[in-house]
Length: 231
Image (tube, helix red, strand yellow):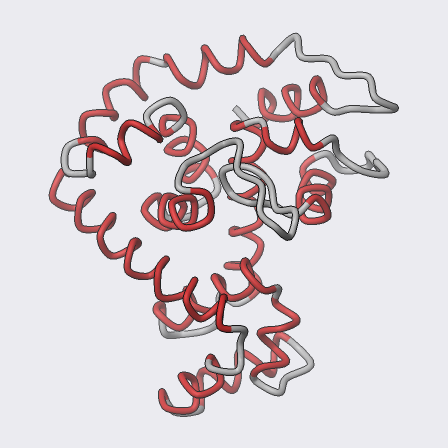
């Protein structure tokens, strides 16, 4: 599957305005119609609100596969996607974030170049970034990167909030809110200081980010319960 992803992204990446999309259809059919994934759909769909199902049913099989491959929680990915774009692949924020996972072009480019090592590009075309499968894999890869960066935070709830803060506002801004210059010092303070300290420092983040943390966490718990009850 990893080779398929690499071939796909290479095939649709844009150099000097030239797009090659020959493998988009083949990858879509392989990832969206695969028999094993189809058998998983009733489990995922059972308890979700019908409005969400209507919006995510076209691409959730791909989310299932990619979240599992990259060891990022499925309800977490779905909660981020719900809060970021309400499952709208054409979403564009006022700040220029794109697609289902609302990726900034610079973030998309950085995650792309990690996947395709040794390939340097000046920028990625916006239409490519907004392609659902590209947007999903790059968004999941970014979540994976953030989780790996702060994996030594012992409390899973605190760790999730820091990941979300990094995803929404940038890890640098999160560290600044905690008066830290390094990832190591951030992790040490969170592990050794009180819950009160942690919550106070989160209030130093932009109001938009604080609301984002609340919304994603609430949705994460809801989606987790749906999946547990359906298992």
